[in-house]
Image (tube, rainbow, N blue to C red; front, side, top):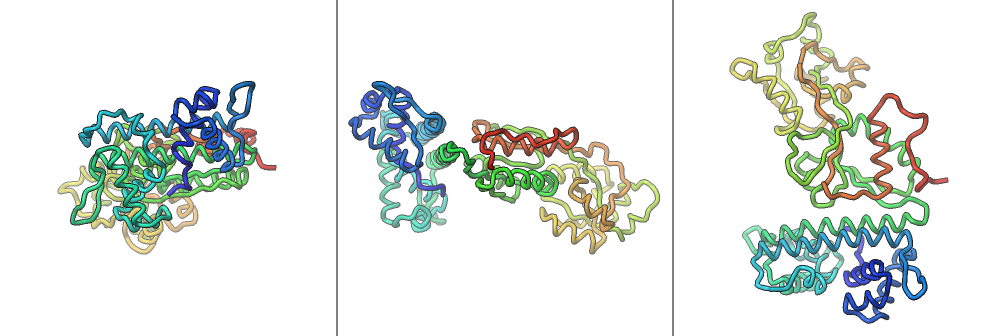
Length: 420
């Protein structure tokens, strides 16, 4: 899970003080004493090692770091409140309290325990995930259910699983935690040296074509930023994106988009081609190939549902009887290349992914006119995602690398976060 998160009441107190520019008015709003609010803000500032609010006359004013963090906290609290409201609606809660009132009764410990149990479907594993004991995690989740008056878990033959209300709340809490994690990174970067993390869901072509150049230049500029790449089938990457585990995806775009809470941005169009090993019989044919020629050999292709596989299915629709292609399904580019070199299999793939092997003479692009052979490669985001400044820098560089031609003399880095 993310780093230990601040106390929820401290976050609410800080937000009110930042919004109202007053400790006393914040204390009234969150039903705490003024010393308690002052202490809560001091604990946050000690945690970050950065000032968030400063005294101005009889009130307070946010620092730059304080404004950035308050924005993230407000976004996180709004997401939690939305999750509570939806869970109450689905769960048929009897409580007449509003989601905002219930939010004031919850603790970070309860929310972290609930997210951990929802992630592992096991109280013991959840306890290990949050660094607590099994009884403590069990107690925290039951307290959460009692406050909301909604069942969040149910026992099945597979163990503990989330109810529909629990699933909604779990997803929203993960997004809220991601916002708070982003806020921490922004505060820590306020001292000058860019810090934080970037989690990228990366699909095959991007791993070979645009990402290496982007990484070499970005990491040279921002050595303190951690970057994680997750390589999985598209449905798994999409799940991680929508639950706040991944910041954005890079790879083939889907049309129409599979869900309505994502945005897609095209970076470039990639041409598909039919590829074989250099010793393949079709590599020696000195004429344009036909579908019948292709149908005479086995293939290795990505799984069903991918854009490349969809294009292949459209291609073989013109083969009498559908053809017999002896398919091997795999997303592994290493396996695909090995099969092409060591057998008479064919594949449909982007030119950029095999250009090196073609230049080396290991693979050949067959002479077959595909027609609509372009697929869009780009970025996929959550529709409500707000990147940190460091993440924006990464995206800007990635777009610049993908553009390819007509580049400026220097990569488009801003002064923010530059390292000496």
